[in-house]
Structure formats: C-alpha cells, structure tokens
Image (cartoon, rainbow over all chains, first blue to last red; front, side, top):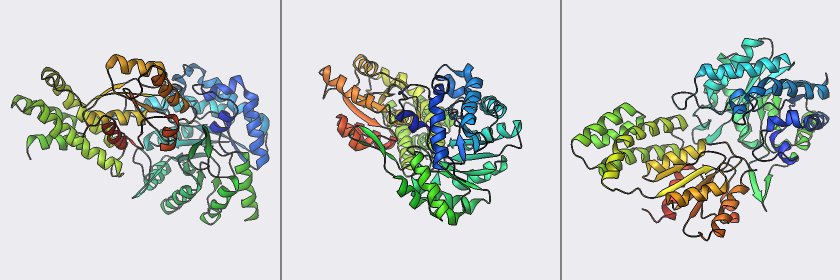
Length: 281
Length: 212
C-alpha cells in the first residue's frame, strides 16, 4: 500500500514560520491540510496521515497548547476525513513526546503513557482507521505509545516506525536501539506493522528494510526522506527526485514491504512516482 | 587500579555514586584538584566521547556518564575555584530562535564540560541578541549554535551578522552544528567553525581557542 509523503516540509513550503506550532495550522488553516491531503490522494496514496505528529500533551506544552490536545487531534482527523471519505484510510500520526525517560531525563513511563493515551483517545474518537507511531528513537517510549493505542482500541491497526542511523555494526537509533531490538520490543507490545521513517534517504531505508525482514515476520512499513537536506544558495533542498526515489525503492517489491510512504522532503510528485513504479512492477 | 583511574572508570560506567565516593576520597588524601579533574573526570569523558564517536555506545550511556562526571565536578568545583584553576575557556551554547530540539546541544555541552570548558547553556529558542549578550556578560570566547530544523538555520547567520555589527568579529567566535547543518552552510554564513558531531565540536572549539 502507498501512504502519503511529508507533512512538515509541505507546511514549511506553504508558509509555516519557524517557531510556529505545526499542529496549530489545524485550527488556523485547515484548508491547507485538506489541500495537502487531496494532492496526496490524487498522487495515489491510499493512506493519508493526520497533522498530529506533535499533538501529544508533552509536545504541545512547549507551545503552551497542551489544553488543546483533544481539539487539535480531533479536528485534524475530521478535516482530512472530509477529503478522504472512503477513498482511502486515515492514519493518526503520533510522534515522540520530546521528553527523555528516567534515568536519562525526568519523565516517568506513566507520564508518557498518560499523554499518549490522551492523544490516542481523541484520534480514535474522531475515527482514524489506523495509527502511525512515528520517528521514535526510544524503544520504551515507542512501546508506550503503541500500548496506549491498543488499550483504547485493540481492533485498530497500529504501525510503529523508528528512526535509525547507520553504524559499523548495523542500524541503531540514537538511543542505541537496533533494528532487531525494535522488532522484538514492538512485536511484544502488539504492533501490527513495523518499520522506519525519517533520518535516511531511500538507499539506507532499503538496508533498514532488509534488517527488519531478517528480524520479523510482521508487515513492514518504510517512509524515507527524499535524501538528506542540503542548503543551496540559502534554500533547503532534498536531493532525491521523484524518479530517483521510485527507482531505488523498486526493491521494496522483492522485499515485500507492506506500506511505503515518504517523510521529510517528499511531495505528491514523489508519491506519484512511487505509485507508478508499483503499478508497473 | 589507582584511584584516579577508578574515577575515570566510574565515569565510563556511568556510576555516579562510585565517582562521588572516590572523588571525595582522593580530595581527602590531598590529591590536587587539577589532577583529579584531568586524570579522573576528563580522562573518563574522553573515553566516553571516543566510544560514542565510533558508535560503540549511544546517547543513554553518554547521559549516564555525564551524570557521573557532574557528581565528581560538584565536589571539585569549590576547590578549583579556590585554587584559581581556570577552565580551558568559556562557551555559550544554545538552540537558535524557533528551535526546540536540544539533545544534540546537550551532548555538546556535556562533551565540552568533560573536556574542561566552562559551558553557559542558554537552552532552546534563543534569539541572537541573547546569545551575544550572554557571551559578553560572561566573557565567553565562543558561541555554539545548534539547529535541527532547516527553517531555523538562518538564525545562525543572524548571530554572525550581529557579532560583526557589534565589532566583535575575531574576538567572539562562532561554531555551528546540528543534523541539517553542513560545513558548506557554516562557510556561507561566515561561521568560524562547524562541528559535525558532539565529539568533533570539542576538537573544533579547542582549535578556535588554540587549546591543546
């Protein structure tokens, strides 16, 4: 299945200013979210993710918006559902809390669980078809998010993606979680699909997919960046063109990756190229 | 194992209780604070920094090692001040205005302290004026800037420009870093240095301040 591409970089392109809470766009400019959803649907995405990546109470509190957790999650689902209808699936996005768990930081597991529970309650109530836990680097935190979703709605599929870096010993998250450890831990938490998003371009993501395939029988999901961001003449560009990405990602067919989407720097054109590649494969 | 080596190994293992206990012991034995700092705490953090650089260990281990190092530092600090032992230099660090990501910046702070620098951490979302003002008030020679968002990177250029307008170019040096920040970008905005990771940041700052 094809999921949509980036939200953050699309919002930056559409005028999201630095320092502005991206989730606040849900209330201030919902039509922008609807435009983006429409573009991704037309590009061939079957799964459209909600603008709720940073809509956990912990993350929202850095902007003083924690009390808007419920409304930001619910409205984000509603505005996208209006566009998607039953032409596709709405995935509720849930990203890291931004806090470090004890003993590395001062957050307790219960605190993080309660925050995710609050976010998941709203996403589920608003009618998401599935949940995407994304860009996680801490395994305990990722498991707490998955558990919160499953505790509220065990029948709703949950996919969990972690972000890895290449090391001489294979791919590890910045918190030291290997792909194999991620697979084992998240499977134990009851996840329905597992994989990686962000942090890497297409080639590395193929390698990560291979490591996951060796570590688990769960359906795989990968969402590469369109390469790593470079600055050219003061502008930020992502190096992988739609055709380049689609070409490299051809290997997901043999690897039997279940869901392919895009992260930072990807656009509807990237999703369209991937869709075309898959249809012709 | 000699006691200073035990302190170093306590830092490496992230054992804050052991580091505090043995540091107290060698202080009472009359070991010089500078030698405890250099051969105990800094020696330990150097090993941690190198292991982290080659991906042998990861963030959690570095954070625990830092906590152990601080446990020793807390006991040493009053003695170092009393003996007038200077740090290698003062560095102001912060994530630039609009950016709330701080793990990388925190790591740089840990590595710089572990190497013997005094670090003034201004936190996140720091405007250029605040960075330059803090550096002047604290008599810091270097400003270290971090960004994770491509949209906040231009603020780094604003800091360099502000330093120029204040006539402080050369006196107040700048180093930039963060996942999307490249050496090319650092050059384009006129920063004095670019750190590609936290361990490299220490090397670069030492270069900037002509410290061995």
